[in-house]
Image (cartoon, rainbow, N blue to C red; front, top):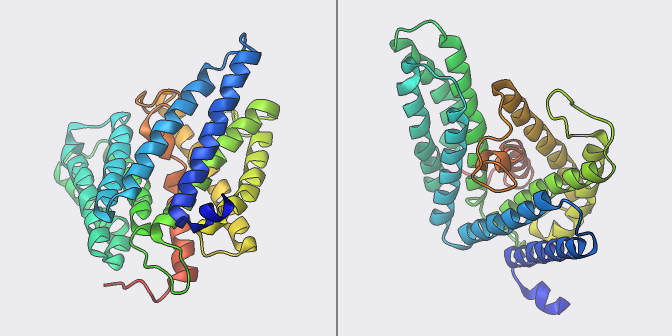
Length: 320
């Protein structure tokens, strides 16, 4: 069985591992319900169900052609931006700028599609940064101008620019002498980011007592944070085959991603506290909205992409 597993591609091995984890989690929850029927496990049950659905959608997306995968991540960015904009207090004067922000999504992913790395890097943080304030200014409504400009541009950076790095991972060329593909790197990133969320949740739920950011995320504890980061760092050894990293490198990368994922999570929590909501929406049972699921990826995706691009693809990715 081990030999058969090793003969699979890195992506398929990753899929088998995720399937095994979800199956084990489902069995554990079923046993807990039998042993302790009085326990309130509804939140965990909903989370497991949602993880099954999200895993199926994600693997379905990356198993198809790269163009279909890019379309999936483009829709993911569009949806995340939509959930963010929905909670904002916007002015009538902002409508054209908001339209431009949503139109930036297909444009950003078009640069990925044609492999224009240089434009992918600067389109949103340079050109959109310069043009959006001009469009807002032309509405001739100075009251609230600065706030609107900041809110819209921040959303573009986080939910379009940040998440678009997921798509560009698919465009990375295969390294000579290695069987690591962009799909495998993408899978590593998503597995590590999501497992970090799971581990931090479990550690915090079981032994967490010391609040880390009580005014931002009351359920986050130091025990959950430290336990999650350390467990994620060790867990990364199981999915090392998805990367070109050696043992020390994969653990260092996982450690950085775990810390970054936590930061992404609590930054989005600060936004929700500011506008007075618990979740960005209720589209995913037990998880809130789509943005509640990809909040950590807004931070981990660009960090991981640029670490990989710098150390392994420098000079290989064409700027033009």
